[in-house]
Length: 352
Ligand code: NAD
Ligand code: DAU
Image (cartoon, rainbow, N blue to C red; front, side, top):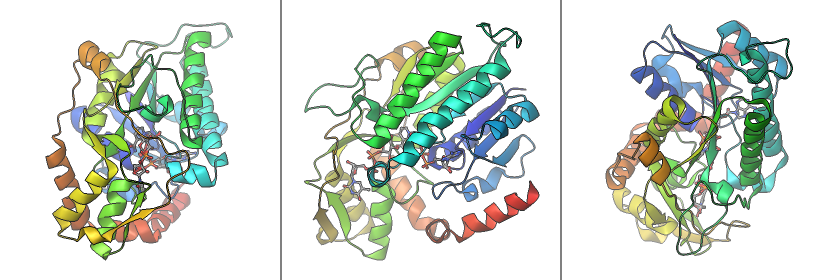
C-alpha cells in the first residue's frame, strides 16, 4: 500500500484530487494535511470521511515538527503539494503570507521528505532515496508571466512572474528544482492553467460570477474583460497529476492546459445566459494591478510522453459546474458564512 501525503487537500483542487485518487487506487492510503484557511473546507470531503484509507490531519506545512510527525506516523511515500495561498487579488493586498506559505512551507516539506526518504540517514551527502518516493509540486502557468496575442507557454519558457502570488509559486518551483539538483530528491513540477469545477471557493472568477447571478448582484469584470485564460476542468487536472505522479520522468516539469482559451467577458456572458440573467449585470471595474493579459499552454510534452490529454468539453463542463453551484446552496452558504468550517475545526482540534 502506498501512502500519499496530500497537502492542502481541503481546498478546491486538493479535495477533487483526493476523491479522484482514492476512487482510482482503492489500495492507496491518503493523508490530507491542511491548516484549513478560509479556502480549506473539509465539508468538501464529507463523502469519504469514513473511508479506512483516508485520514485528515489539521496542520501547517510551515511547522517542521508537525510535518515530521506526519511522515513518521504514516510512513509517507509520496507528497503532492497543493497547499498554498492561491488567490492573486489577495496577494496584491497582502503579499507576505504568500511567501511564508508558498515558499517557506514548500521548503519545510522538501527538507523533511529528504531526510525521511534518503537511504542512509547518517550520511549527509547521501543522494540515494527509498524506492518509489516522489515529491510532486503543484505549480501554475502564472510563473511564466503574460503572453501577447500569439504563442504558448512551453516548459522551457523563462519564468517571468508578475504578481506576488506567481512570484511565490515561481520561487517554490526554484527551490524544488534546487533540492533535486543538490540533494537528488526525486521531484516533478506540474504547471497548470485555470481550473474550474465543483468546490472552488467563490472568490475566483467562475464561482463568484455564478453566486452573484444567483443573488442578482453586479458582476465585476476587471478592465476591458478581454484578458485570456486557458480553462481546464479540475478532473482533467487530477488525471494529469496522476499521470505525472506515476509516470513523470524524475526532475521534469510538465505543463498542463485545456487547449481552451476564453476571454473573461465571454465566460461571464455564458454564465449570465445559462442562469437567464441580463447582461446589464456586467459591471466593468478598475483593472487588477499588473493584470496578466493572456495565458496559453502548450501541452505537447505531457501528451507525447505520458499520453495525457484533457477529456472535458468546455461547454459541457461549464454547464455542469454552474448547475453544481445552483444545486449546492447549502455548501455555498456554509463556505461563505464560515460556520461549518468553524464547527469542523473545533471538532478536529478537540480530537487531536
Ligand atoms: P485553494 O485556495 O482552494 O486551496 C488551498 C488549500 O491549501 C486550502 O485548503 C488551505 O487551507 C491549504 N493551506 C493554505 N496554507 C496552508 C498551510 N500553511 N499549511 C497547510 N495547508 C495550507 O487552492 P486551489 O485552487 O485548490 O489550488 C491548489 C494548488 O494548485 C495551489 O498550489 C495553486 O497554486 C495550484 N494551482 C491552482 C490553479 C487554479 O486554477 N485554482 C491552477 C494551477 C495551479
Ligand atoms: O492560471 C492558473 C491560476 O489561475 C492559478 O495559479 C491561481 O491559483 C488561480 O487563482 C487562477 O488565477 P487567476 O488570477 O487567473 O484567476 P481568477 O479567477 O482570480 O481570475 C480569472 C480572470 O478573471 C483574471 O483575468 C481576473 C478576472 N477577474 C477575476 C475576478 C475574481 C475579473 O474580471 N473579475 C473578478 O471579480
